[in-house]
Image 1 (cartoon, rainbow, N blue to C red):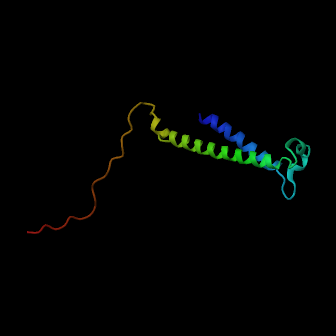
Image 2: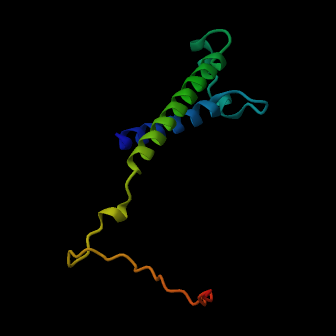
Image 3: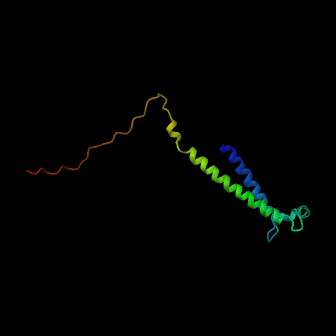
Length: 110
């Protein structure tokens, strides 16, 4: 499931990049090369369509990002180190806790 969403995420990122680059800006950008699209999308040209498409793609990108974050967090409840088995199949002992201290004992009262 996460691999499918990751592929969709990459496709959405590429689509958003293309739709942003096709929009007109103060320096016109790559939209100058799509002059024939003005007759296809109406009198205003592709700007209204590209703005709506960019908004929809961005919304899908955000929803997909949240879904991926949720799924990766859900999968990360266990560690890979929990599944490691030693070659001799013995349980690794815990580190012994030292209980001795070097502090002197308090004097006894009579």
